[in-house]
Length: 147
Image 1 (tube, rainbow, N blue to C red):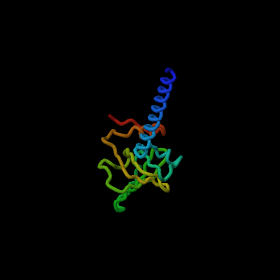
Image 2 (tube, rainbow, N blue to C red):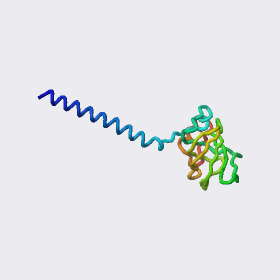
Image 3 (cartoon, rainbow, N blue to C red):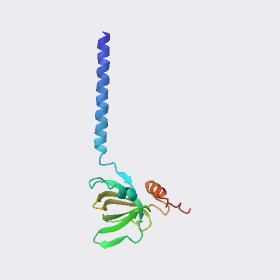
Image 4 (spheres, rainbow, N blue to C red):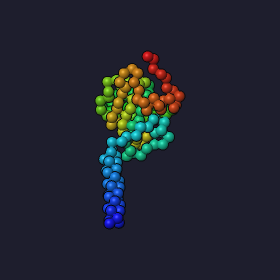
């Protein structure tokens, strides 16, 4: 009688373990396209990601690099003070997008150019994404905004 109870308990634990592993694998599979890693321009230049990898890049729009008028394609460079990465974006930029302002772009790094599919800009005069602030602080170029 005891061996039957023990056997059922072991079977129940085994089924629960398999269910846990299977559910974890399904969740990971479902989220694979929704997870975008953030990189600073210095990280992209030091260790370029593969052309198929979608990630986020953030920093300041480098002054003098914003070029409009090539059809709908906009070209500019994003910098964190340590490195600069050229960016192309086809579409409509946010209203608050301009040079020397914080931005975050989602896309792929192909042939030395970040091809953005989405561009996010600052919300107000003091906003900058946390990842961008951290990258700028690491480079030693971050300045606290005037309140």
